[in-house]
Length: 246
Image (cartoon, rainbow, N blue to C red):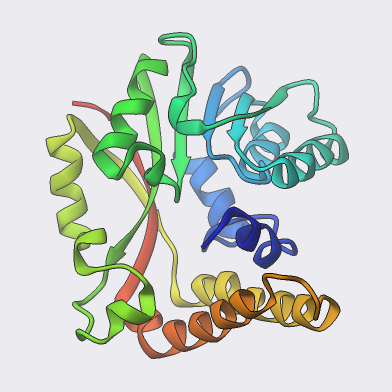
């Protein structure tokens, strides 16, 4: 899906992944954040994680994203919550962003490991910016169970795209990090993330009948509905994993 389609589908979202506010709060607690903690969030989206954690825990942070639309929302949210003086948002390709070595207590990439060509590549990108005793936060889908063959066309990716939950742990080990904690999405948080996009997309189609992308957006909406109810709810999980160097 193109960046524009993401911007349309998620225009009503603050959290751009299958997490509720409660899950995001829990993740901040298990990550053991505190005043002065410095976080770099790669592919930060609308910056809700940085904004919420700066408000709750006093962290400072930098968010990087390619979308001007999302970054404007992030800056507005930071001002709304009164944390704009502790956060900075930069537009750019998160996969090529090079931070000062060892400058951050937390480096995160939540649901966007494609910036490094996959899980291992994303971890390789993240580690240089991390302090020796710092933690990584990586959000990634996983297979709950093996889907039937016809599911992959509906998903738009193949079985090799993700691993089982146990397989993710093995991949982390191979990348030189260990899992300290995890917070997993549940079926309801998946529904809220995916299903709430349907109304947004339907409204956009009604309001923009002459847009050149209207048929592609309509096809995306139809495929997203079928994919989630037929296969996603049963076979696809998602979680954020708290990691540190082995």
